[in-house]
Length: 347
Image (cartoon, rainbow, N blue to C red):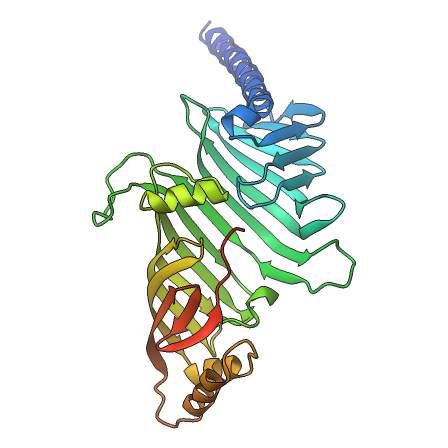
């Protein structure tokens, strides 16, 4: 009799859990499809599209797979141009007890900035894993983490012979402000976003003629965006953010290699021409190498290049040198030396 009760209890528990799992799986699928269908409203104009959707994973997890996934991001949301993201196959994995948290996995995805037939930039991501946490009440995005094996990009269409830049094992983490107390009491505006990024070996051709240089063994960035709301990436949106006292605080930035590294902290905003405006406390290892690289930059005034060459040959340079880096009047200065003209962040 006791054995029969145990068997009945086990069967009842299995049946109850099965019903529970299938109900949660159905809810997770419906929530995912609803989030996609209502994406334009929830994500300020971002349109999401999915292909055929299937559900699996019983009994330990809920796996929602889509044959295709596309995202159309309008101009002004992240860049001045529209962005199209294409993923041939994607899986979203949920735990039954936490349906608002999904781990999203895909082997390959690409993106184009600008028109599809003639993009400004083509980007490729390999082996991507993303963690997405939605608000349980509103289904709005709270936290986002993205990790990839490799990210590469080039200007124009792939295969046109343009230089390819890449970053190995990039990690990107974005957290929304949850209304909690922060230590940035010096700022009137709350922390709207907290962003963390790191990567390993990189080749960034766009940095070739800058203070940083194109090669790095490691990149680390920790920033806090001070704003009343997330600004649109438009002239009007960024101007309003600036006029409202918006600031980007860089609590940690490291870029470089074992031989030569730049570290800095500071605050950044925009001037009336939407060019970077800010000041940073920095330190540079092997500064002679930095000075020689800047000396070879034809965009730097001749007098400044001569000063840089003389400083690079000085025998008394310490291993690590503190520097004041500033951005003002559309120019970047390392100490008193103007090293580059700064373009507006948007035109």
